[in-house]
Length: 494
Image 1: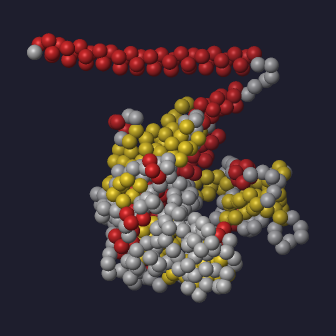
Image 2: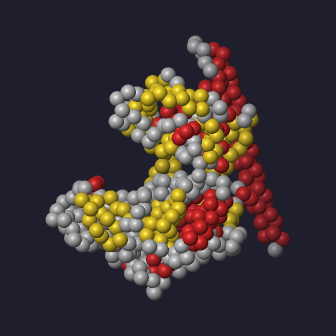
Image 3: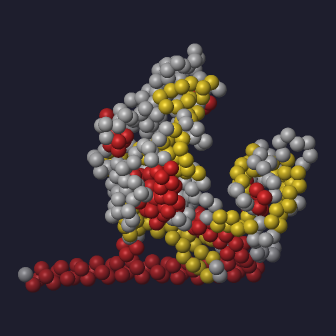
């Protein structure tokens, strides 16, 4: 007996020594490589034939080192802090306009109300020809928008080409602090159906969504449901994602947990407030640019059978970033964990190899179940189930709305038909076979000012029905299909 006990102690001791040896070797490698890097950096700066900028050289080395990890692990220099501040609280110093590259020029696509751009008379559609004497032809929208940012109170001169005018327009603007609204619009889009648009999860996002829903309920006592728009929402603060969920789900519900290499850093996040309305039917709109916190909200509401998801497959970013100070007002934003939502699934849709995303096929995705037992896959929060097993894709809307709801007929999942009544001659009634599928748009009736992002409709072959390859469509939703420029009245059906 004593021999066995001594043997166990010896084995455990050897294991500890081996582990300690591994750790010692790891730290030795870190110290050795730091010394090599320092010596190389010093020699290059001292002896290289041309004059170098030490800061630029170091930035190149840091970017190359972090570039092999994942796209979200970055070095943030002192000059980059302005953008970091915008991501956190929605504030930045600029003129309050956004643009998009169209041809050779960046064209103004959005102007914030009461911003310097608005006050100076800049208009949507203006093509930016130059910024403070710098020619803007051929430059990316990121470059031009970076030129427009700067210290509050400084001035910037623009030359723009305005549609319908023969002469170019000169505009001088004074940069100011811009506070973006994370809920820029809410209202009624159809009889008894409200609409709330959330652009980003900056500070007070949860409170602003709650106030928007309260306002809709007070002004429209007959409110029957809410469309919650998270399209093109790239995410933001985790605690605001929890607060947004709390608008629709009760106190004490687990919304997200994070797990990483250091167990002491693992966290669970639950709702902590009384909801605004935990019973009103909710449809969440998502698309391929809905990421991170947007996926936590949409995925959690789906896992809790609290909402129907409509649109495209979401981005699939389930990585947690934290920032660490590294001196001289610089930071490193690095991935430290992964997000998990109530069913236990992770929303990360890709692995990273040499810094590049590698998609995970559906066959390798784990199957989880929602609170009511519906099958869901990890890696993309909106998926209701496997397209290869359509019988197992249970009714999202039925689970949320119940048997008595007029729309509780069943969703359209991948491979289901969209019947088109009263279709024009060039459109097949069971699908779209001759029309250009890329010209297909879907817009809800009732005046919604942004198209529903059902952009993955296509016909595989003549006579084949259009398919929603990823995502679910709400049965009974009336729509207008724009096919080859012709409006077609339609209703999504089981």
